[in-house]
Length: 93
Figure 1: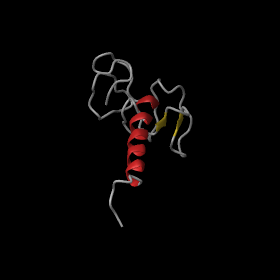
Figure 2: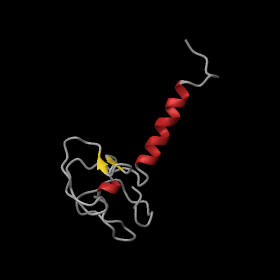
Figure 3: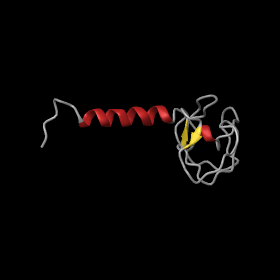
Figure 4: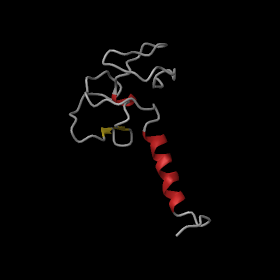
C-alpha cells in the first residue's frame, strides 16, 4: 500500500494502528481504503457510518487496503474495459 503522505510503498496488511514505515502517517484511513470515493468524499459501502475526516485514522471494520490513487486507477481501468467493448476493430459475434 502506498502512503498518501510520502508515497512510500508499505506492506498491504493494515491494522487499526498501522503507520507508514517511512513517515509514520496513519494507514488505516478512508484515503487508503479501496471503498473510499475521492470524487464524492464518501464511502462506497452502504453499511458503514461516517468515521470522520478521510485522512485521519479510523476503526472501520470494512476497511480494505487500496491504492492511494483510489478512484483514479479504478476509473481508468473501467473506462478502458468499456471502450474495449465497443472497439470497431474488434471482430466478434
